[in-house]
Image (cartoon, rainbow, N blue to C red; front, side, top):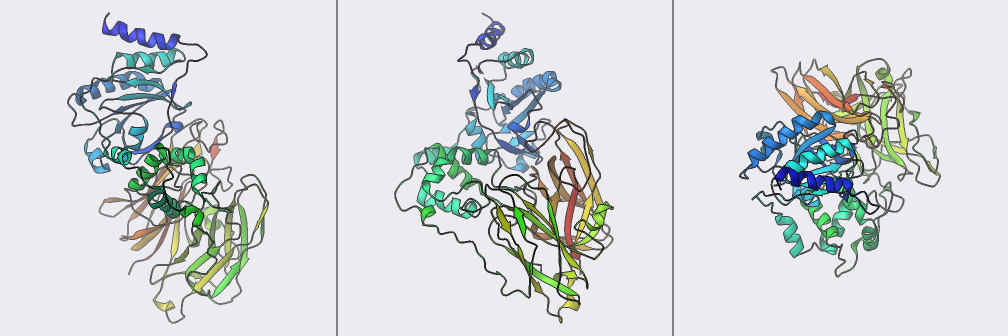
Amino acid sequence: MTRAFNSCLGVCIALASGTASAALDRTGDFALLDEQGNFHQLSRYQHRKAVVLMSYVPSCAGMDDMLTSYRELRSQYAEQGFEFLLIDSKDSDRAALRALDLDVPILQDSGQLVSEALGISHAGDVRVLNPDRISLYYTGAVAADLGATLSAILEGPVRNTVKTENPSPCAISYPVRDAHSEEVPNYVTDIAPMIIDNCVTCHREFGVGPFALDSYLSLLGWSPMIKEVLLNKRMPPAQIDPDIGHSDSARYIATEDIQKLVHWLSAGAPRGEGSDPLEELNYVENKEWLLGEPDLIVTAPRQRIPATGVLDYIYADVELPFDEEKWVVGMQYQAVATSALHHLMSFVTLDEEDFWGEERSKSTSTRRFLDGYSPGEARAERFPEGTAVRIPKGAKLSMQFHYVGIGAELFDETKIALYFADPEDIPHLKERMVQAVSATVVIPPKEHDVSAHAQYTFQDAVVISGVRAKMNARGKNMKFSVERPDGTLQDILSVPAYNYGWQPHYVLDEPISVPAGSTVHVSGAFDNSVSNPFNPDPNAEVRSGLDSTDEMFTGYFTFHLAD
C-alpha cells in the first residue's frame, strides 16, 4: 500500500468507529503565554473548530522541513476555523523565543508542564485538540494523516483519536520530571509550606476561596482541580505577565514550586511521614492596624450580602469628620465579610461628585484615588516616601463594593484606617493622584478579539507608581505602556488574561520616571464570543457604560509630580 492509502485508511477507520464505546482521548485544559506575551488557553478557542499545536525545537535536524509542512497546512486550513500554534518544549526564555522571529505564535512552556501533560516526546510532535470537549483529535507527526484528520473534522465528527508515529530523531528530555520521579517532593517540607505561603489566606474556613485547604486530606480531595487550575492559569488569580514589570501586589508562584506541586500530585500525592503542617496551622485573620494606631477610622455603611449570587456593584459615600484639609500618607482596609468582599475601591470626591466623578463624561480625568482592597493577606499601604493623597476641605470618600454570595447571608461593615501627614511635612509632600485614561467601545456580538486603545500625554514630568485595569465581563487583556518624547516605548505592566472578578491596584516595585511630554498608552481587547467563560450573552452587542452590564475600557495610572 502507498503511504497516502495508509493515511486515508487510518483516518477512515477512526471516522467509521462510531460505536457506543468510541470516544476521543481526553486531555486537560491548559494556558500559556506566547513569545509576545499573548495569552492562549485551550478552552478559550471554542470559536474555532480545533487547535493545532506542534512542538518546535530549532536545533533539531529536519525541523525546518517540518515547519514548512506545518505552514502549508496552516495556509490551507487556518481560514476554515483552525488555530495553528507552536509550543516550545525545551523551556526556553521569552527573549530566545522572540529571537526565532517565527510567523506562527510559539507558546512559552515554562517548566515543560504542558508539554508533559500532552505527552510530547519528540520535536515535531503534533496535537490536534478539541477546545469544546478538551480532547484529542490527533497525535503524531506532520504527515498526510494530519491533513486528512483536519479535512475529516470539517466534514463530520471524528469518533476516535487518530494516532501516528513521529519519526523525528530529537527526543524531548524532562530533567525536572525525571528528578521528581526519582525523589518525589515531600508533603511536609515541600508541598504544605507552599500551600501555606500561596493559598490558605483565601482557601480557609470563612475565606474567599470556595473551599478550605486545611489538611492533607482536603488537599488530596481537591487535587484534580488544583492541578487543572495551575495548568490553565486560573490560579493564582490576577496573574500578570512576569516578563513585563513586577509588582508585589500580584500573585506569583515560582515555576519550580509549580513543578514540585504538579509532579507530587501526578505521583499520587504521597503523604509521607511527619505531622501535617496544614492541620497545625491555626489561621487567625489579622485584625490589627499594621501601621499602628490610625489617626482616623472611617466606618462604611453596613451592607447586607445575600447567600447566593454575584451582586451588582454597591456604591456608598462616607462623610469625613473634619473641616480642614488633610494629607493621607497611609491607609488600611479592614473588612468584616472577608469571605464575600471581592474588591473595594475608594476615591476622594467633592460634594457634587459621585464615585465616578469626571469619568462619567470625560475620556481622561485626574482624580484622587485612595486605594483598593482585594482578598488575601491583611495589607496596609504606606504611600511612597514624600507623597500623599490630599483630601480637600469638605471632601468625602466614595466607595464601590463588589460582593459574591457564599451560601450564607452575611453583613459587612468595612473600616478604613487613615494616617495623616505631620503638618510640618505637608509643604514638602507631592500629591499622589491617578490619571484615568479610557476609550469608548462598541463590541459586536460573537466577536472574540475586539481591540481597544486609549492614551494620555503628561505635560509635566511625573513618576508612575502603580496601574489598574478596569473592564467588565467581556474584558480579555490590557497592557500599560509609556512612550517618551524621543519615541522610545516601554511596557510597564501587562494583564494578559483579564478576569472580571479580580481588579487589584498593582503597585510597581520600581516606579517609572516619565519626562514631560510623554504619552501613556492603554491597549487591550474584548472577547464577546462563546470562548469567554465570563460572557453572559455572546449574542448581545455591548457598549460603553458605567453599569456592570455595560463595558468599560479604562486604565488608571497612579502618579505624582517628579522633583
